[in-house]
Amino acid sequence: MLIFLLTSHAWMKQVIFNWPAPNGDDITIADFDGDGDLDIAACATDMYDDYPYLYIFWYEGSRAFAPQAMPKGAAGLAVGDLDGDMDADIIFSREEYISWYENPSWTEHLLDQAYGSYAMDVDVADVDGDGDLDIVQSREAVNSSSPIKLFENRGGGSFVAWDIAYHSRADGVAIADYDGDLDLDIAVVSGRPDWPGKGISVYERANNFTWGDHFLSGNGDDYDDWYIACGDVNADGRPDFLTPWPRIYINQGGFSFAPINLDNWDHTTAMRFRGGCDLADLDGDGDLDAIVQAGSENMTQPRVVAFYNDGAGNFPRADTVDLTHTPYISGIKAANMNPEEDDCVDIVANGANQLVIYWCLPLEVREDVGSSGIRIKPGLGSFNLLLPSSARIEVYDATGRLIITRECPAGKQVFSVNPGVYLVRVGGKTLRVAVP
Image 1 (tube, one colour):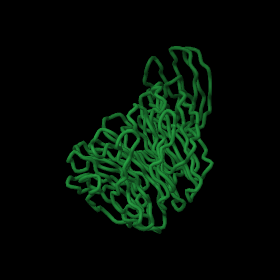
Image 2 (cartoon, one colour):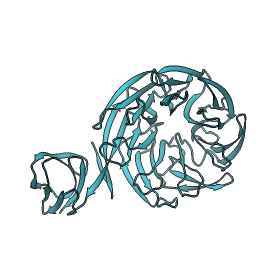
Image 3 (cartoon, helix red, strand yellow):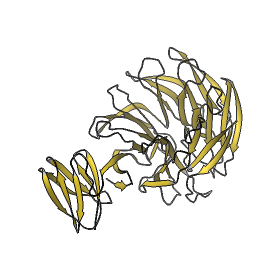
Image 4 (cartoon, rainbow, N blue to C red):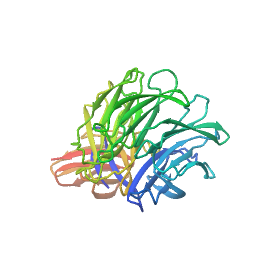
């Protein structure tokens, strides 16, 4: 368990699952059983996509998840109500097929199969504006023989497949109305230094079988971006998109995008860089922050990092969430997974060997500041805790190690510790104290 101290909250790392395959792939989050809390669907494969896995992790409260293996595995995942019955179905794709599981029976419906290229990302949206959800799938072909596909939902479980474009090594996709003409377009990223792809394009929809290609950059620049995310980061009404480079493409209008690097992680053409990203309001200030994980077999320092938006699409502050979690072709998502405890956003990250969650712990009390009658005051080699009622106390050091557990009555309690910064859990609240 690791805790990372931030200015307004902390992250506590919990391993949800150890994969039987070495490469954790995509994830998605939804309330699959309609019980009011969020569950996780996640997948993993071996290096060659021969032995795939797909699990649903049911949230049971108190930060606990129950895994359920699904009959078939996947590399790419999406979620949406495909059949209009008001529950969340799961769309999953891999090298040999794209299918969807119908919730709640989890009956499989095959959409396509045996097309001879890796099936990477998959996304859902009402692409044609007819009121139901369609499916977009990227296909990571070595050459141009396998197109990006649109599966048009005709209702009643019937889909018609359309070819959008021939985009070699298509990986991440993000659907949005990038040009403001009230229909949906598709951003696609691809490329790898030792197996180059086309690069980055945004495909403009004219109709289901006519798409204009707005090419942004080639494979030597922003390559191997497996999962991307879109959203309006600068409140100008135009959707932007984020890649795990990490880089934001700011929408200038007219399919013109300005690439803004959030950081430079010493990318080289030998790195085979891989990762995932998401956009969410991590600090509750009303704008979208960026969450990025990156790593590969040639990247010396894997990382999970949060970049905080100043509201104008600038990201001046970054917090390193983890330097020990190694992603592969791995998705990352942000959502409040335990609303019964707090109202802040947690981070779920798939990885090379593990599915993990970083629980957001709001720092409700700082040094010598009261909240709900609780007061904490540092002293030399100790800190005092004033409790209005009895409570269970847990003290963690800066590395996340639990060093003290104590059931305490109401009143003043004294804790002797070495100099340093500590997180103190008092029931469901999290406090921070720096001891000289």
